[in-house]
Length: 285
Image (tube, rainbow, N blue to C red):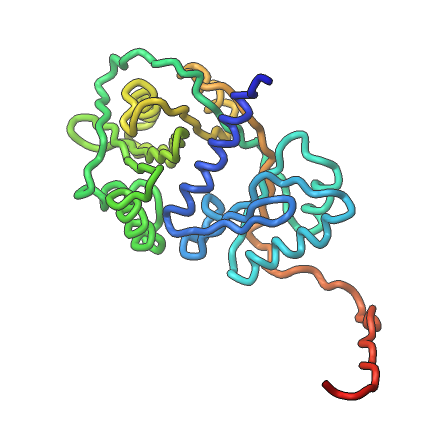
């Protein structure tokens, strides 16, 4: 029997995505229909999302209420990643609870195993060192989340668990870090996360050089397949030129900024649906 390697690679990439959040101090709760990825101290959708939704029409109300209660109790705003094509009942259920789909889908891209040619630009890419952890964190999170993110990143970077490795990369221009990314390897799958460029250096290929360097140099070890998410058609097209292909596409549902973190009322209270049965009388034992 032949093994569907692309499907296995896709599942491995999604597992590595979850493990990335876990290694930074989050946790995942599995329930029938989905995995709830949660990070209470980093309250942003990037670290709080429902992945791989698959729930039947007759079970959706209980599922959504249970999942949303999990996040709302923690004052978190999750996103729901629904693989396309999104089932009609799932779309209707999420909209009923106030969620709306983002304008563009989220696409998981997998590398085809090709090594891009070396860049001829003046941008130079190198791995960061632990002493640069403050510079690394400055590329991504706000001042409020930075201490928590810095600590979690340093622990995972310097003290990795078995089967994982985390390594930030810098793109340097004129001796200055102008872009950064995080490589996270879990077993044989490497996710390229948090690619960010300073505004003054955008349009000079620094982000593409970071991704190309990872594919070409294997800085977290050989024998791995790389993955990255694209959240726009323009980025998806650019990643295809670097040797990636679309593996799975999600529609992301999110709450509007002014939405209350509360479930709608269930309606007027009714009588209980069960009654306790009196214990039969008889000699005690």
